[in-house]
Structures are given as structure tokens and as C-alpha cells.
Image 1 (cartoon, one colour):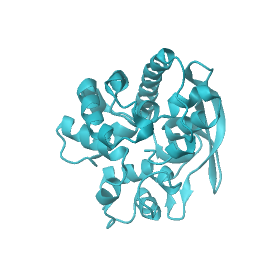
Image 2: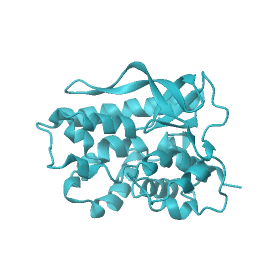
Image 3: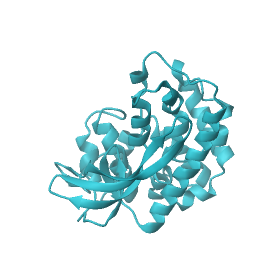
Image 4: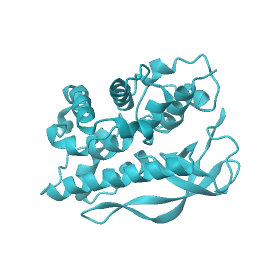
Length: 264
């Protein structure tokens, strides 16, 4: 039987992997695990090839005293925030994570310094808004930075429509007013929820609260999980906005498309 943490990791990591943004090739392996099958798949070996998610989960597990970085508590702490996140010292986590990431940083990742520590959190949101360079490109006026930030973060929403192929999810999309990021008004958007192996969320129905990653319904959330994800997202946006307010002018690399790889 597939361990719960392995399945949850596959559920959240699938969409960017299938799009070719991160992780190893062969997304059908993660798809099968996310649907509850393929018990013989070496999820640990696959997860280690996610250069974004894996260092976070290793650091979270070590600071929490949990031997397995794919323990379900660790996986959920990273992707959506959970009770475990409350017990991680943010300063200690930030220092440990940057010590892992900074030596591997490329030319456009020189922002991975101690100045980033006040934004640090053991979650995917920190990676999206703080570690990735995309928030630093918002001032260019190009639509791509906001689109990537909004697609890559894990958003929550309610299923308001469903058919054999796609669901319609009502959720708050990310907004940028030229100076600040915020959660905009709710809107209805289509989201895939099935792969050839099946669905990640069994018996998906109208009214379900779900998590969406790169326009794919990857998980069903309860009220507490929605509250935690929303609260952590709002906290992260507040930290990011403080930094953006201090930046006199945005950095504008010559090739913004060079940063799409290694997203989770």
C-alpha cells in the first residue's frame, strides 16, 4: 500500500512535473501514485529530483525530529502548511534552507541572502514568493510574472461545476496593483482533475473545497486546512509586499523564461 505522504507528495508535485517545469521525466509515475496506485514506484527517488520541494522537506523533517521527509505531516507542512509548521522556528529554518539553496544558486538567484530571512517560512508559498525571482519581475509590466506566481502557489477554492473532464473552481486569484500583491475577488475558472489513471480526489462533487496547483485539482481540503492555507498565504504576501515596497526598482533579467524550470 502506498504510504499517505508519498501519495500527497505526488498529488501536489504532479502538475508542474507534467508541464515539464520540475522533477524527473515520466510524469505518469507520479500520476499513478497520486491516484492511489503504483505501490512499487520509488517515490523517494522521484522526490529527491525535485530541487525545490525536497530541500524544504528535508529541513522541515530534521527540525521537527521526523526521520522521513516524506512523512505526511512534513509533506503537508511544505505544500499547504499544517500543525507541524507552527513548531518550526522560522529563523532557524530560513538559515538552514538558504545554506542548502544559496551554493547552488545561479546568476539570477543572487537574492538568496540573509536579507530574505524575514520572509522565510517552511512552506511552498515562501519558495514561490520569496525564493523564486518572479516577484522581482512584477514591475516590468509583463503579465508572465503574475501568471506564474498565481499558478505555482497552491490556491484553495470551491468546486461549483463538474463534468467528465474538467471542474470549475471558484477561488481568489492573485492581484497586482502596481505596488502590492493581494488576493483578488473570487472568480470561476476551469481546472483539470483527471488523468488517464483516474482522479486524485475520489468522488469529487460540487461544493467540495479543494487545492489547485497549476490549474489542476490535486487535493480535497477540510475547513481547517483551508483556513491554514489562507492564513499562511496572507502572511507570506504581507512579507513579500514589505520587501517589494523597499525595492526601488525591479530587477529585469534579459530572459524571464529562463526561470520557469525547477518550480516546486
